[in-house]
Amino acid sequence: MNAEYLRGFLLWCTVINYAILLVWFLFFVFAHDALYRLHGRWFRISPEVFDTLHYMAMAVFKIGVLILNVVPLLVLCFLR
Image 1 (cartoon, rainbow, N blue to C red):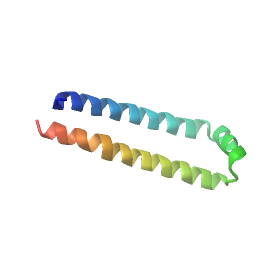
Image 2: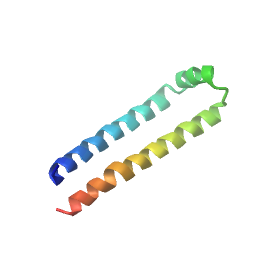
Image 3: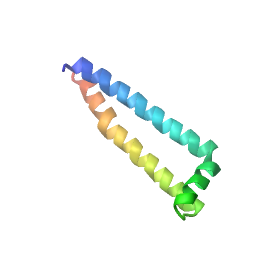
Image 4: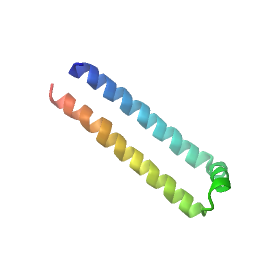
């Protein structure tokens, strides 16, 4: 496995992960009530807790993408 292949792989991983994050955010913003009703059937949580959990999960996902995809990609780009 060479560095160019790994750079392309990490770039596509980053793009796909940020697309997932964007879709998640758009669903959360535009289908908030439907998502809350769906999750409300399974868990008894208030809307404030629901919002907090989603924002925290999105933040953890974004940090994971940064640490596991973007940072190694930048390192490989700087090592050219």
